[in-house]
Length: 442
Image 1 (cartoon, rainbow, N blue to C red):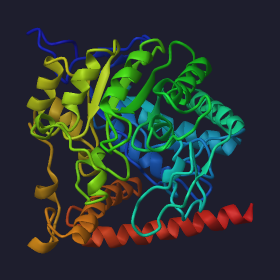
Image 2 (cartoon, helix red, strand yellow; image 1 turned 60 degrees about the horizontal axis):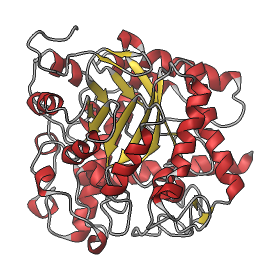
Image 3 (tube, rainbow, N blue to C red; image 1 turned 90 degrees about the vertical axis):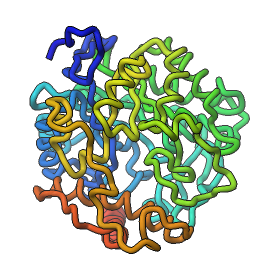
């Protein structure tokens, strides 16, 4: 659809990226963890099923869940991993994945990542990080990391570049580097986690070196005409962490790196503002978001405005957008150029088409969709333990329905918060066992 004639920017408008690629509209299906890979961390028919469904759903861009560059340090069992030489079988699976996700003139961008210290203990008892600063989460879910050495850091930069090259070669139409949410790149940026005193830590310029070197290596690997995006925290929202002022400075430096799209998000596992849920974790270390942003539909929109003032390229905001009016207002206010929508796609793969065609004006909300149980177990329970179960149960609800679509099933809208929490824990435990069994056998 061509640009509307009323001089107003709308979600139906096309977007031309700096690299020359054109996006058919302004809606992007945001990245969400999938867990659909097999025990060898290869793409499967579940990816094909899911992305075939999503590529018919109307989005201009589909972002994959984080594809890992190192099989030892995963975000969860079931991540796709691309490292080293790829077998014909691995490549053919990725090609099928890409073919499914690029139907209907849809862009499919592979999100490439390294989990760092947020690698679950079930995957690696000793993860890696910039420094030996352990993730503070209940239940001993994450081990104390060891600090990466200089040579390992250089190797990881090339792993990101290699992963991006394979993405391009197998038919993905772009990549997104995951530099947010407390994963490895985000850890390097944070003065709370990165305590190094060498060239990779200390000042913000040194803490940002890992990110900038990865962006440069990826660009060299894929060429100038291939879209590269970056996901960056607007802030960690954690005392002593990566601040909003830091994010503004990093965005300024990124002007020199030829990015095609910068996505603004926020939070870490310890402060999960990325999903707009209060899980009651480390409240004494939490930094509050601005009241103006809390009152708005999108979680990070006001922070994105500050970054818009210094970043010259296209900007994307994900998190909290639910109405077409809110989306169009954000575009017209020049707060962003692309609207990221994630969780609604887990229960309605056609949600973008419905918004673009104006068949609906609002995406379904959790309260209207999910069976949340009695008041004391409800979404807004004041009890800290219940608050945590609710937070992870809500996450489980979306993730389990995403998995159902990968299995060729329709979403289960009657799945309750507590049932989702228990079912997800069981499935992750089984996946971790299968991953361990395979890794122990090779």
